[in-house]
Length: 328
Ligand code: GDP
Image 1 (cartoon, rainbow, N blue to C red):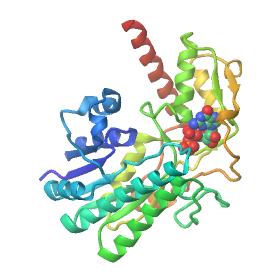
Image 2: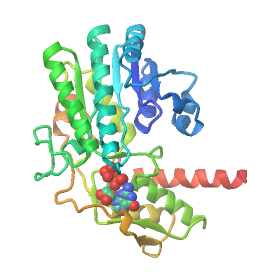
Image 3: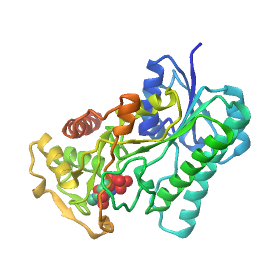
Image 4: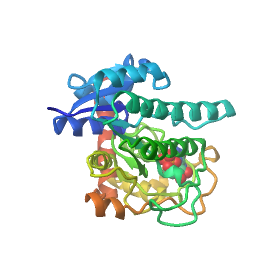
């Protein structure tokens, strides 16, 4: 019998790649999506090509009864909980709603699993933001948690719930501490996509400059389609364990600029403006992950090269712009 998997946030970057992977593996895929998203082609763009192959349900993850009913009726074998509110908060009320939404959603999913389908395995999308302000580099599964944002705190509290319920109720639930991972489906607010789309626009003479913050900031940037493979492996292992999912390599925003602008044969130095509004507080120690453990246990390793990821993203942005040009 085909395995059944629920993906929350199926329309996001990771959700859409994971849905493709699971469909390829013969799973029946059930996606949970917000009611407001289903009516917007913008929000379902990433799954347009597989929309007839997946079963979509609109459900608010904050509504415990609705989540319970969904799990009880589907009886999934696996659940990948990827959905989260992740916008930058500007007020204390925003902070509270990020905390409440993210924690409540995780709680409702775990509660539904325990009550309605205790054999269902749960993957929780943790984040390197759980480590936050670190003093060791690279970070691994033993590094202490020190989130520096409410988003990080909300991810940490959900992770603690995963650990707690795993022990208390014996469910198969685990957290992947994913570091930044990119692809042509990355949102435009992230610096990678902001730069690749700007390089494409500038090359096609649609823009002249890109405004950025600290270009000496560094990140451990991986490739999203590889990271969703790690998630699937984690739910098909012998025991539930939490893992760091990262490349172990740091690159600066400056290198990102160089790489992206090289693809279109331009010198980024002629096209950037540093703007105060994009500068964030300095990070003492950069977040870079050590994925030795998942390689040892499950054979997963990040393989895509930074340059190849960025090149694919720039080429995709060029293609989108040319298509728009042809339509106009
Ligand atoms: P995240 O901060 O890890 O969630 O990922 P981002 O892609 O938003 O940012 C990655 C790094 O790029 C951070 O260290 C930012 O400070 C730096 N950065 C520099 N300029 C910009 C910018 O204009 N936008 C964003 N989003 N990040 C910038």
